[in-house]
Length: 313
Image 1 (cartoon, rainbow, N blue to C red):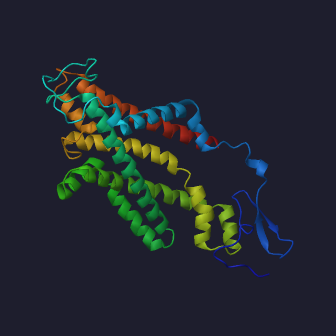
Image 2 (image 1 turned 135 degrees about the horizontal axis):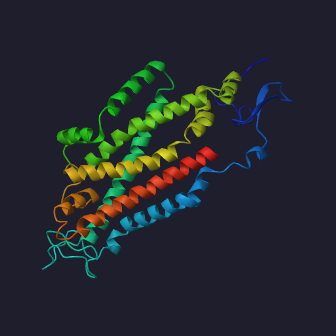
Image 3 (image 1 turned 180 degrees about the vertical axis):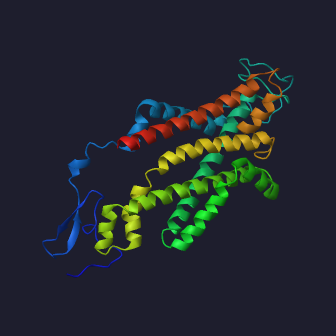
């Protein structure tokens, strides 16, 4: 019997993870027949966890926060850097819902624009880190020596706490939004790289992958068609967790003065400024802090819902 060695076998050659071996009536070549479609009809999609319980709460909270941040130019009653007359550290009122700061700027307006800045940073930096981690994890699957070298490099990055890495990078490249994005991306790269590598190694040892290799499927085809779709399942959960961590990293960097620089607002810098004037206007610090808590809480709820749905399915 001749075994095909093509790198791109047809769909009838290799099928789903729950498939069983059969023999083609036409060619006599062993193929992997798909499982009974009804067998997985009772499985619950991980995305269904977002539509009930804490997943729904997290989704609603995140949607509200994102809409508030993106609509900041429409919702903010004043420009974020406008200095108002006779409005130094005013208490919350109908004209200034969160009061004003020490240079007569409306705190609500700056909080909305600060939220917008944070959303842009975390939703740019975390996907970059996820993409870099995925590339490194895939690169290690083709050569053992490359895999070992990459894992040791990722270990070195993981050895540095995020704030230490942030301080070192800021000392070299300077402060600003670009530095915050770079720090978050560097911190998240080994997280996604190690997670995806472990998942790939687990899936590659499963029987359906071994069956595909036996009938001559190429490595790249197996990786694209079988390994990645099954190994990538935990990425959604990790994305939600990493986004919440990125909010903390940005807030901490701006709080320490090595992140977003004034007069541009960010949640971390607003909290840092508000602490010094809490006696005059407590809303100055509580407003941005509440936004950080809601944003992180919504992402954590989404991560928990996705994780629970994966375990059930």
